[in-house]
Image (cartoon, rainbow, N blue to C red; front, side):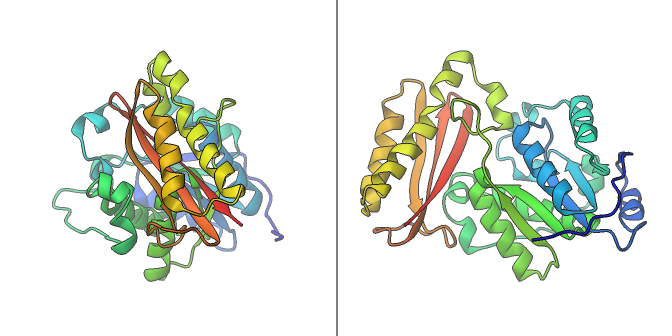
Length: 290
C-alpha cells in the first residue's frame, strides 16, 4: 500500500467546540485524515495507533473524551485515570495535527436521547458482562466519525470485540471510513498495555501477567494440534484460577468475526478472557489460525 502525503504540519490544534474541529478538518479538502479515538491517559498502545495514522495519512486527528455512556458503574467512571497535559505533550511529539477534547455537555447536550445499537455481536463476551457498554461505544464513535469525518480510523486489537462492533457499525451505516485494527502493544512481561493497569496494586500488577500466560498456553495447544475448544477454555481457566489474586470473569474461544463460541476450531479462533484483580478488570485476547 502506498500513500502520497502532503507536507507535515508541525502545529497541533486543540479544541473543544465541534465547529472548530470541522473548520480545521475541511481547511484542506484534499488532505487525507487518520483518526484515533481515545479516552486519554495515553500509553504506547495509543501512540502506536497515532504513529500508524501518521504514516498513512496527510493529517492526524485524536479525540480525548472519557465517554460516560459506556460505564456501568459510577465509581469506575470517577476513578478512570486522567492527565490531559501529559497526553497533549505526547500527541504533539507524535506530530498530531488536531485534538478534540470536548466537554460532556458538548457530546451529550441536555435533552440528549439518541443512541446507536449494534445487535448480535454485542450480546456476548464484553457485551454480556457489561450491559449497555457497546451502546455507549457505538453511540460515541458514531458521533466522533460525524465530527471528524476521517478517511481512516485506528483501533487496537486488545479491544477485539470493540473492533468487530465498530467494523459492523461502519459497514451497516455506510460510513466511508476504513477501519484499521492494529496489533496489541504489550509491556516487556507480556501484560497488554491499558490505562487501567495504573490502578493495579504492585502485587496484582505482578500477577496480572497470568492473562498473557493463559493465552500463550492455549495458543501452544492449538499449534500442537488441539482443536477441542472446551479444552482450550479449560487450559486458560486453569491458569487464571491458580493465581491467588485473580478472579476469572470469562474465558472464550469464539469465531473472530461473529464472536460465537466454537465447539471445534477449524481454521481460526479468537481466544479471549476477562479477569478481576479486586475491582480492576483486565481483558486480553489472541487470534489463532492454522
